[in-house]
Length: 134
Image (cartoon, rainbow, N blue to C red; front, side, top):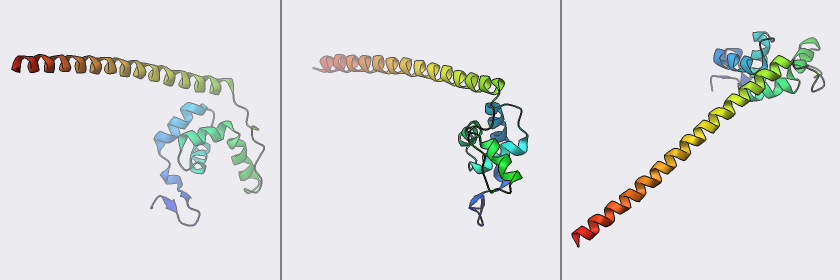
């Protein structure tokens, strides 16, 4: 695959999309520089969810330790403090997703009821036609 560096088997910096960077920023907050967000995405293979999990598990501290120590020793998990604004943004995002899922669930329930009613009417029509033919 042209997106993989054969020497290390991981993504190249150019493979991280700007959309993924912005999505990750919306989850973790505006405090991190773009280079850190890209590094988190690179380390997670471009998976925004994995990059966000890495951030909340102390991944930024690990990145800092690797940069300072030449990549030799990662920092302790949880060493990165998460601000209230970041948590607030995360919970707001989760709440919004929950609302969207609830709305879709209601739409599916309504569609199911409509389908059931249509099937019932179709069967009644078939019975009426069968008795009219007899």
